[in-house]
Each structure stands twice: as C-alpha cells, then as structure tokens.
Image (cartoon, rainbow, N blue to C red; front, top):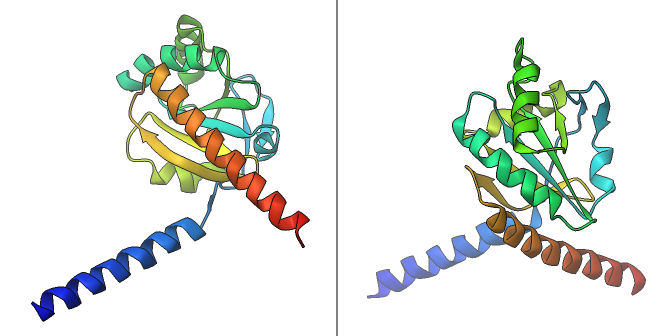
Length: 182
C-alpha cells in the first residue's frame, strides 16, 4: 500500500511539473516572409493586425483539404473583424499547382489570402503530419489554443475561435493589469 501511495505521489508530481512547463512555454510561429498566390509579400506582421490569426495548411492533392475549403470560406465570411485567416498552400511551389488551387478557391468561394511555402515556414511545415492542419496565432505571434488536425466544420471552427478569443483576451487583460500595477 505504501508503494502505491509513493508511485501515485510521483505521478501527480510529474503531471504537475509537465503541465506547468507546458503552460509557461509559449510556442512562437516561426519568422517568415512569404508570397501569396498573387505575388504579394507577407511576413509575421500579419499577426499584429488581429487578436487571432487562423493559419490553415492545406494541399491541392488532399481530398480532406478540398472538402474543408468550403467550410473555411463560410467560416471566413462569418468571422468577427478582429480575426483574420490565411491559407498556406503546402504544395504551392510545385509546377501548375497555383492554377489548380485558384480553381479550388474559386469553386469554394474562399477569398482569404493563400500563402506559398517559404524558407521561414519549413520548421512548422515539417512538424505537420496530416493536412489539413489549422493553427491559431495571437497578436504577439504565439500559437494559441488547440491545433486542429483534419477537416473541421464551420460551426466547430467558430466554437474553437470563440473559446480562443476569450482565453487570449483574458491573457491580454491579465498582462495589462500586471503592467499597470507596477
């Protein structure tokens, strides 16, 4: 019985240490400079313009990405003004892909900016095991909330977005209060 209590105590301690470590470490979206499918250049500055920026990694060869694009288009049309959305066309540097992607985007009615992979995005793209994958980035450039792997319905996106907005606003309010109390 004493061994069981010791093991449980050790497990609880490890869980607390790992949880606190995970909360304390914010994961920053890598610095990048990328062109969109129109040839315009975008950098990490896109994050400072919104409370939350949605980044959806997709590929023209992936049926789940294609299925989800219509959901994303509808979600984008219903986003509050403080939220922005960008796509990252993971196979966008392959010959002919941009033309195919433009047809997909037009069919889906997706008119949000589509970035092409760039050198700065390699580390994050190498960590993606399934497409589509969607990340949420706050105005400081930190990845926040749950990373969504696989296709998601518009209603699910909006629920996740609302929860992340609430958490980010709370975090920003707390950091402003700490600054003003100094």
